[in-house]
Length: 158
Image (tube, rainbow, N blue to C red):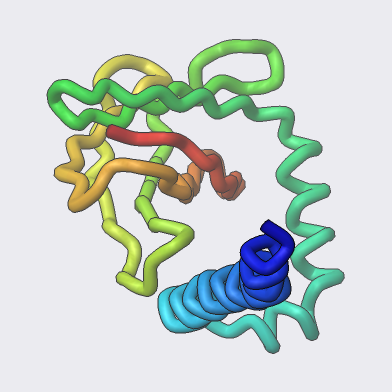
């Protein structure tokens, strides 16, 4: 009995080594897939954006001072993005020029530009055929009365 116990127990250290080898192999595979699938850069020219970061902050303060509100919703069945734009008092911004694009934060493909059309005063919509469902960044730019309001919303689109 003692001989069989001794022969079994000599494999125990190797089980620990094999377990750690599996963990290292899985981690190495995950790192390889992560590095190969996403560059980590979201902006087109990140260095220039970083050098002019104070300008970015000033533009955000000017945007916030306008007090405009932009609400977005997604209708999955027709693939329709709906955008509602109101001023600080809650009145619709009729006649604004709205531009939107969709970008996948996990892929290197170029953003999907949308044709946004007015549907009612302060309400706009665009149809989109998505190549994949999941998280999308919706970049919206509203031009009205010489003012520009830009924002990005992350939405889960199907």
